[in-house]
View 1 (cartoon, rainbow, N blue to C red):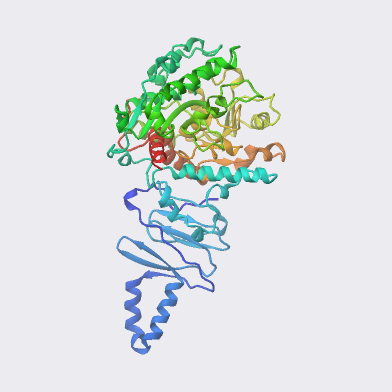
View 2 (view 1 turned 90 degrees about the vertical axis):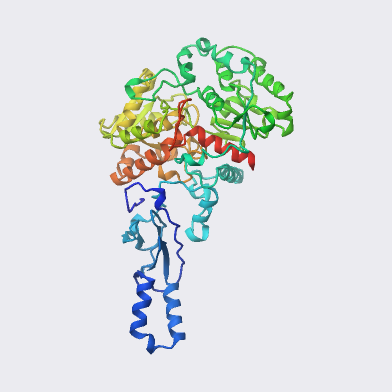
Length: 582
């Protein structure tokens, strides 16, 4: 269980460097004092009686038995407990590393605090600022923490053979590489990182023929048989406003990512109109909507593939494409990667991402192919699209103080045709409890047609169950996070192996993981397992979700003007520019 020494949200102005603690054998004595006071009192009492060499040896011994903290202009020595417990602390940031015995830490006010052995087990970072890149590598040195780095620390899948083990290692490598493309030291909630010069960061937006984007929006009434998409494409594809939820809330469809990104690219401060000034080239092809319009129509595979092939031919005539073979180009595709990787076994989707010309460009998708390094997963669009800092701050205040009258909730439907699905099991478990323990919203009978119903339930719940559906990822994961509801994952591919730029590497900070095998094979009751989580754990996780993660998971309005926050679009652009630069 993670333990926090302070619930107050910290300010970046009070950050200091994380202290380093050396590991030694033998027994240690407990002492915390100022070097100046120690030296003064020691010298006055016995300095004249002991030879200088002995004095120096004694001081070296004390120093080697201690850890040093530099805070403001004061240097502290703290000799660790004789039981060997370890806790590493800096001003405003405390990390606990599992050890055999009791640990002692310095909290943000430099007071010594005992940490019970049973609470040492996970790494807790109280600083509301995510380390990344070089800074994270320095703070989480392998020798210092004595834990494995990267995804290997969070192994959720046991490989059954060498091939599976090799695949998991490759996946871990790809995820770490994608994380390395984040700009080192960026604070996702600090606008100063994005308001700098656009020198060397020019973004060129191709003016494609309308058949590749706008004309697809014009087919909104006939996109799928049972839904008219026209209302979803209003307001730059944010949809119609939901005024009852407050400012910035819209009926946004989960497949609206492409026009949402297009609108933001067109208004980006670093947009250039000269190809020779560009570092990044954006291709506004609505490939997801192209695939969607053929999903439920009886057409040939050639028809499904035709528009994607045409856009590649169009690009092939451009010198800007030829110059780097598309490596500095990005496509935004508002569906899962598999919808663009049709094979001989299935007739679903197109072969757009299997084309040879599409191997070099970067693809932003709502769900990535785990073993395609140029597939980058970005958050599903939620219903919240604020315009100002106050819109975000007001929502944060609302949901952090919102009473949670249900412990667990699940909005979804069973998948009786999928033998591997655990949905029926968790639905039965949920329905066996009263509403204050678990609430179920049945999406199979129209219960989820109104977004307000879903958001209201998530706002009133501590945990939101997120079992895989037709694919591992779910829009509901992001709806729950934006509502301050802790997502419960059953498959690492639902988020952990996906959103490297927008979710932290330590998944325990914002979610709970219960494997599908535990539920289906070992009969674990999900609701009962979640009852074991303390109120303090829930509060700490929700605080981290609301104040640290939330701004980076939403797509602001196309006219948004943020001064303090960076949204999902801003994070994506930073990652793209860094990736292209590398």
